[in-house]
Length: 95
Image (cartoon, rainbow, N blue to C red; front, side):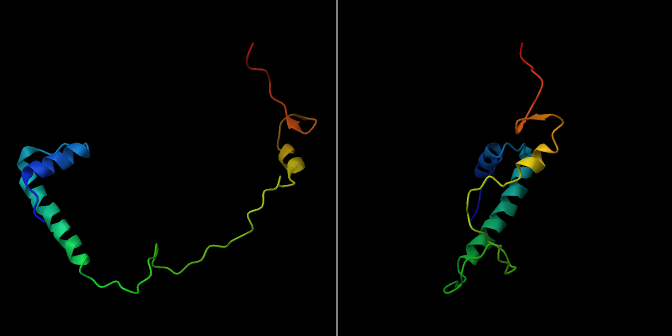
């Protein structure tokens, strides 16, 4: 795919990049080369290849998705500078 100066100018404008007029031809050639490479990738046979999001075969540890209160109220309130009746107390900031 070949890009012209007008298309590169429009792409730069959409990306909010200030490209000097004298660099548009060079940038058009670079972008055209990138797009040509991407077109070659579409010719690769990927039938039977599972999609992946990483080259490392890692699995994430899973746990049951159960909602709990954490049973940590005392431990959390132990960090509070001032607590009363199981709640944080803060000074009044609105008069």
